[in-house]
Length: 247
Ligand SMILES: Cc1cc2nc3c(=O)[nH]c(=O)nc-3n(C[C@H](O)[C@H](O)[C@H](O)COP(=O)(O)OP(=O)(O)OC[C@H]3O[C@@H](n4cnc5c(N)ncnc54)[C@H](O)[C@@H]3O)c2cc1C
Image (cartoon, rainbow, N blue to C red; front, side):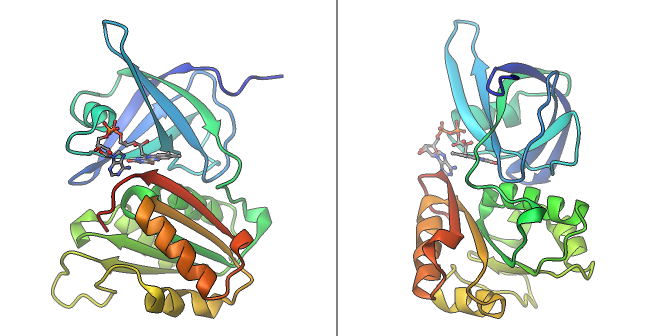
């Protein structure tokens, strides 16, 4: 049987600047395995003196993409691994990765919906894999995405989300901008609260699948909010990216 968790050496095939602080890296894998939307890879860096640092990164690309994966990484100011990936890596470089990992925070089109997806910042990454998979699979399950960003410049995948929400497949995208809003902004303009959750989630009913991803405080606040709105806890799946809250 194939061992999924062996380290392999991936080659950086492309690097795309998504926002000021976010880049997407396309990794060519010598030994690719099929993944499910929502899974992640571990990435390991080794310094010349043998020091190693390892972090997890969600797979941004959909499962339909063969032989390569995309990872979308936010650069943290004092972040050991994310600043290396942003400041040092160039196309053609190699990094060690292993995966795909995770069987809980995943969605496959065959599972159906309705889907409620809620993200803060780079927490959009595994949800984007689900949205890309949903589109590639031709799924039309009613889906609502609530995405919290600091400013409009910080919205990751903005144009692609606009395209998906205009393709009449049943995806509705709601943005909230917590720090500043451009003139004539028509989306939400505050942190996610109970009223916002109710406004976004209500039309889907309570028999839904909810996926929440982002900074720990956002994830916990949203999960508690959904439970208080009557959504059964076993319908809510969460992924925590980090300790801080900036949304
Ligand atoms: C399953 C999983 C999937 C993940 N997927 C992604 C992804 O797709 N894209 C992505 O950018 N990150 C993702 N992360 C977060 C990622 O693993 C790292 O934690 C992040 O890149 C910071 O690592 P660093 O070495 O740059 O920072 P570190 O040197 O570890 O930390 C620097 C400082 O930032 C704080 N910090 C650590 N993590 C975060 C965070 N996520 N947000 C805010 N502050 C933080 C630390 O407390 C510390 O103060 C994921 C995490 C998990 C557990």
